[in-house]
Length: 342
Image (cartoon, rainbow, N blue to C red; front, top):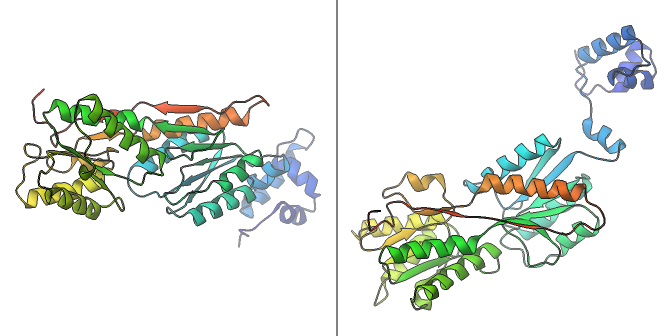
């Protein structure tokens, strides 16, 4: 029976050869005779020998591994980012080691510790929603390991990151709603310590000001989480106001679906009575009726750009300067907000 744990030593013992001879034969070294190479290859096949590329790489001073930490791999956005990362990393000859923080800063710290112990050559990370201090990021930087943030990033000096222009994305949604005749535009906001949420909130507020609409704190609901239930709670809060909104812009798609279900149950027309928009352009936005207006986050491009930043840092000289790449958002206008025919 083949030994699934076969090593170079096992092959050498079976053939009566030196370990160094077997190693060179497997590497197709010119100094090893062809008949010896063939004997070694045949024995390796019989023993189901699998070379340990990680160990070989570490002996050469590199692991060939790129670590990635995401808050979760549910939904659409982060898997799309991972597709871009893996595609670009593979082209560059790197394997990807993926970790999830599950939105838990303790798990995030453990992920980084594990990746550093695995001697990864770089780390790409989108930080958790519970991360408030950044010492674990600073530790990675202090060890000289390239660190690139994507989507969610901390307020730290000298960091490289790839982000979406969330401010512009939110501004574009409000602009569109104003153009559709909306005057009381409510907002589902996410936790403001995350850059993506603070930028979306600022884009919302700046657009109101730009188009001469007052900012009303009653029209802002901070989502406790990113679920349909949170959207249900938000829209019910708005509907209890003396003057309810005529549009709701959610900083995430799923809560907007919760809001849509409540409005339909109450026979409130969308978009005629209340227009709706989300943010992220999840696939389900085109499967509901009416289809949901949303903002495309360019996940695959974000992943590719993050790997390119890592590769630049990997080859960097002492005078390498951190870079920030900002991707342009694109609003996908659909039936949930389209009051006027184009």
